[in-house]
Length: 522
Image (cartoon, rainbow, N blue to C red):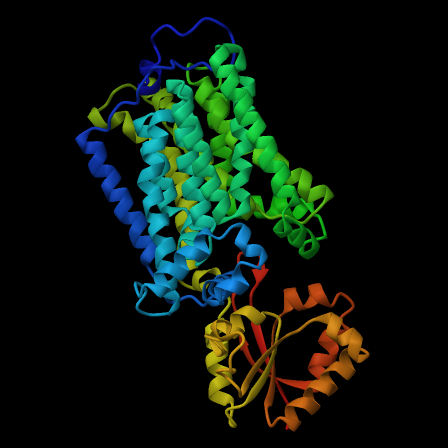
């Protein structure tokens, strides 16, 4: 008999609804051997999240984090980021307190790596309540080597906080169901709100919580129905508030080209097809067992946010899989549960050959999934250089080739070039420019329209650079350039007016992150 089935063998409350759980059932404690295994998994996760932490260049979102953490308080609180300030305030506090003794990429990413490392044992603890000890340990192992989670753990951006608080909030929500505790329910809502304060996408978790409560209400008493209504009401309120806040409207303006295909492609790339397939098998195998209440909750946790993003992605705004990052814990737990269930079936078929015979078949599926993710990890830490373009190397190249100490840099990635060429610029708003000889300008097609087209725009920039005795550079990546320049006229004028000086090649999965550096001809 399986571990999870044995735990739920006792008589269940009457009824035929979905919430097939024994509500007063505690999770079984990990054995000493399992605790040692969890420690080893956590160490592995920590090693992968600290490896090369400072080697990768900042990308545009990390540069935005630096901007918001170093700009004056008065300017920050007037910006849209003040609606979700938690990660910025954390980094700002660490900088002001002198706890980040350096301002390099590795030190600025370290607080986020800490939450990424902590998420590995937390997944096992939460998963123990939902899918049992063995399955939760397998899920923690999958998380330890998951390239998507490694990437965001090595990212000075708030998504790993979304993962952490979503996992913690969902675990406390399940405890509130098991123990019928209004206090725990309110605590789970507070934890999800902390996730929303890190990034609005954490609010997607309210939808599966409310959906599960609605599906399970046939098995709940009157007090539980009241709590269900409270969760539904709070979810509706949060959704309404989120649709009204300025960041949402800014996001819609910036990503006004909805594409379901883009969402599906990024889901396949980030979640990994093998992981999604095994998770789907887990739902199919376990939905008719005594774990069906837990499997239903995990299924809601995955499916409902993805449906919501799918609706947005086809009708209103272009969304990507990273906005569903809060669903990754449930996918991993379903994968772990499927592996254990299939392992038990295989073990019963081949018979008991040794004490470890029950574990070995259960490792077949995780080994396949791990091999897929570890293969990508190898690329991530080697040729793909942390899945980021080499913006730091570009800045070093510009400074090395610049002969006058004065430069005008036109770029497709203004925040990152500001970080590398004018690092403390944002903290000096309203003061004297700390980098008077360096200017970074965003390449915007609206500026070209005002100047009378791309050719006239480049002519004006060259004239201004000569008048100010600055050397003119242009730094671009082709996918972003062509997104701004669908007819190709901008790219044609760029090559006509400037000379290609250096290329920094790199591919991240299917996307070309190669950076091209142009310089004005003498």
